[in-house]
Length: 109
Image (cartoon, rainbow, N blue to C red):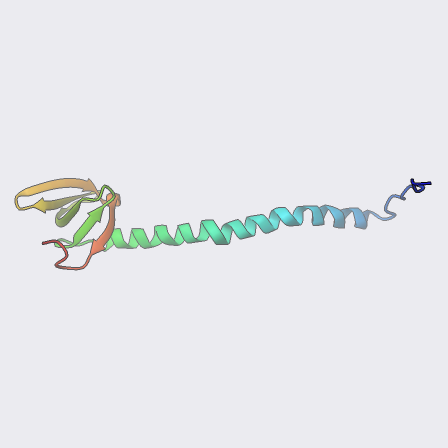
């Protein structure tokens, strides 16, 4: 009375239908990867490229901020290290990659 009759379903006749269903099952995974690429991976690569260009353009006399928050003026430059003058007569050496921002001239008093 309350339960309806169940009918068996037949299997798909052709193998092409099976191939199409497997592609449709992979579609959400592919879409998630595409969204992940455009939302996370691509912007991070762009940010790394901009940081690398900033590091390559460093010059003596630039005022910079390091990753630790230290403000200083570039006094000497090497291949992988930069000497920063943080006060008159006080120099520290930091890695080039530690520089996170170049400040406008005259920012440090």
